[in-house]
Image (cartoon, rainbow, N blue to C red; front, side, top):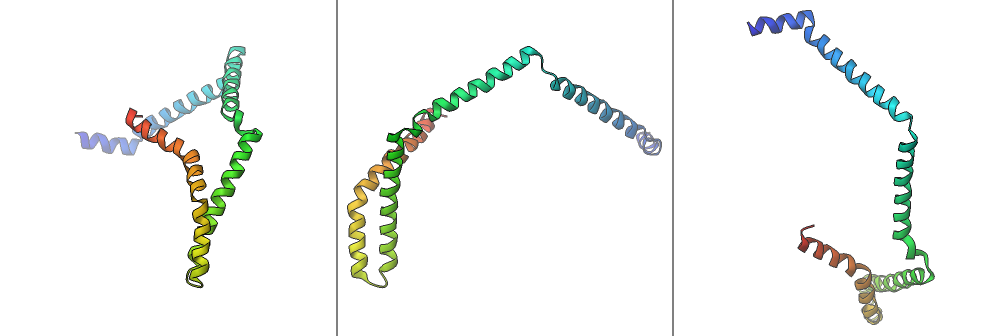
Length: 140
């Protein structure tokens, strides 16, 4: 009996019509909701404005100290120290095949910068590493 009902539905299109009606109903509901969202009430406008203002205040709080002379100088020094250290180590490794004495001298110069490079690495990346370890310990 179920087989004949299924065959009848295929030929008469009963299920297709039901599906089309559902799709039309969902489309109409979506259109009405979309039109409703186009027109804000004064209350909805004020709520949206409040959310935008709160997001802007959070962004200003986050970036407040990033553009002071002290912060810019700190970033420049970090770039110079780490850039020179990485350059000297790479150059020493590349020159080793050509002239091992020069490579030794260059790597000694890099060794003089290693303390400063370690301090910069800890100051810049240690904070994030500690937060990751502490966050995992707290179960975040």
